Length: 570
Image 1 (cartoon, rainbow, N blue to C red):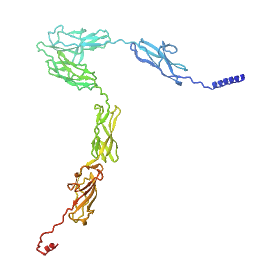
Image 2 (image 1 turned 90 degrees about the vertical axis):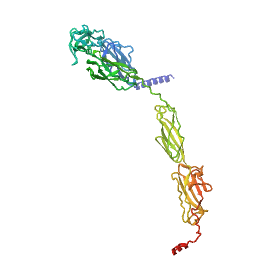
Image 3 (image 1 turned 120 degrees about the horizontal axis):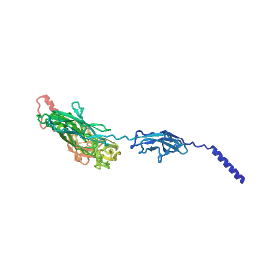
Image 4 (image 1 turned 90 degrees about the horizontal axis):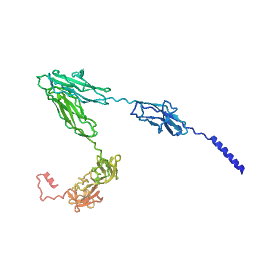
C-alpha cells in the first residue's frame, strides 16, 4: 500500500512539472502615449481657464490609470503628485500667480510598465493694467448769437467728461476749420473744461472743438460747435427747425423682419443758417443726414427704421434733432414687438363619418366626409379604391368616385396624411352599395300589319343606352303571320322581349308606364310579363290590322270612252 501511495505521489509531481513546463506565459500589457499634453496659450493672471490632456492606450485590453504631477523644473524624474488629478485631463488651478509651472502625467496599467509623458510648461502672464476710457457726458453748446463789439466777458463753451480707472482728464480747445473739417490751431491757455470766448470776435461764424486726453487713454474730441457773431445793426437771426412726423411702425411677432424705413424731412424755418448734428437712437437705425448745413428754408432728410432683434415689448422713443443756435426738433417713433404665438398642440383625428352609403351605376359620386374632432390639426381627406364586386370597375379622381358595370359594392379607403400623429397617417375603410339605374317606363312604337306587306320586326322608340329588344315575332291566331295570312279586321299579336342593359333595372311597380303607340299596356290590350324579374320584360299585345276591307260603290259610273269602260270593268 505504501509503495502504491509513493508511486502515485511521484506521478502527480511529474505531471505537474510537465504541465508547468508546457504552459506559455501571457504577454504583459504595453502602454503607448498617442497625444502628449499641450499647454494653453495666453493665460493671464486672474482669468485662467484651461486644462492639460493626454491620450494613451494599452495592449491586452488593460485598463489605464493616470496620475498628474507638478514640478519646479522641466523634468519628469521627480515631482509632486497632485491630489485628485487621476484622469486623462487635468484642469489648471484658476489662482495661479504669474510665472512658469511644470506638469507631467504618469500612466499605468496592471502588469504593465508605467509610462510618463513629456513635461509641459504652463506660462501665466501678469494681468495688464486697465486702460482708462474717456466718456463725454455733455457736448459744448453754442451760445445765442452774439453782437460784434458787445460780447459779454463771461461767455463760455463748456464740456463735461469722465475718465475710468481714476485717471485725470486734460483739455485742449482748438479753433476748427469747418470747411475742411479739421482742427486748425490750438488755443493758448485754453486747457480747462470751459473756454471763455474772446470779446473781440468779428461778425461771422467761429468754430471750436475740444480734445480730452488722459494718461494711458485714447483721446477723444467733442463735436464742432459754431459761435455766431452778428454786426450791431444786423437784425437778430432766428434759429428754428421742424421735422416731419413718423407713422407707427406697427406690431410684429418675434422673430420679425425689420419694417420698411420711413423718411424724416428737416426744414430750417429760421432766418439764420443752421448746422445739424446727426441724430442718434437706442432702438432705431438712423440713416445719414442728406445735408448738415441748412440755409434758411433749406431741407435735409434721414431715415428711421426699427432695429433688428428687439426684445418683446413696446419700443417707443423720442428722437431729437439738434442744430446750431439752439435749433431743435423732435420726432416720436413707435414700434411694438410681441412674443410669437406658440404653434397649437397637435390634435389627432379620431374618426371620419358621414361617408355616402349608396350610389348609382354610371352616376359620379362626390366623396365627402366629416373629420372628428372638428379641431383636428390635419383634415384633408384623400380617397382610394381598395376593391369592388365582380363585374364592377371603380376609380377616384378629384374626390369623385365613378363606377361602371353592374350593381354591387365598392370598398374605399379614406386617408388623412399625418392624421393620427405628426408622423402617422389616419385611415378608415368604407363600403358603398352600388345600385342600378331605374328604368321607370318605355314609350314604344309598333307598326301593325298592312295589306300585301310583311310587318316589320323593329320596335322603335327604344333607348338603346338602357335596354335592348329581342325575339320580335308577329302572330295571327296560333300561327306566325306572313303576307298570305293577312286579313282585314284581324287581331295580330306582336311578341318581343325588352332586356335591361348591365347597371339598369325596370321599375316593375307600374306597368302603365310602358306604352305602345301612346297607349299604356294593360291586360285588355295584351300581356306584359316581368319574367326576368326586374331585368327582362315579355310583351304580347293585341293589334288590329291597320286597314279595313274596302266598301263597294253604290252606283255605276258612266265613262265617256272605251278606255274609261276598261277601267270600269276592272
